[in-house]
Amino acid sequence: MTNRMAAIDWLKAKRGRTVTPSGILETILYAEDLNAATRFYGALLGLDQISREDERHVFFRCGHQMLLIFNPRQTEESTGGKLPVPTHGA
Image 1 (cartoon, rainbow, N blue to C red):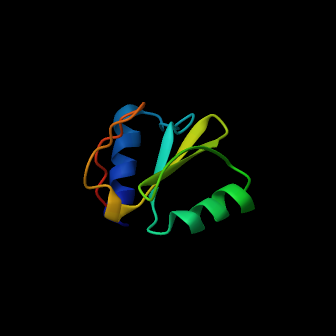
Image 2: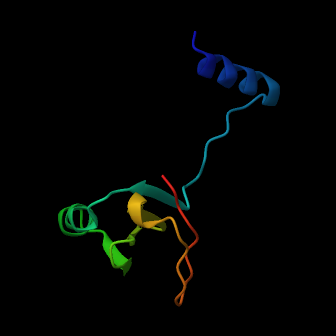
């Protein structure tokens, strides 16, 4: 048995039930090529792009959740603008 499985079994025994999330607010991925990420998630998968800041990040709506894609090379500093984005180091 792995340590992860043992920890899950311990939590189940302690709580008497499993915890199942009902959703994910947002998911963050890193991609150095935001144009390729935009083609894949936007054009191929059909997600709606809702924000992009040059080569720093691109955000997509995925149902009621958000998919945030950051370029790890460009996220050492926070951004200003209408919706400031904090640093995101990979």
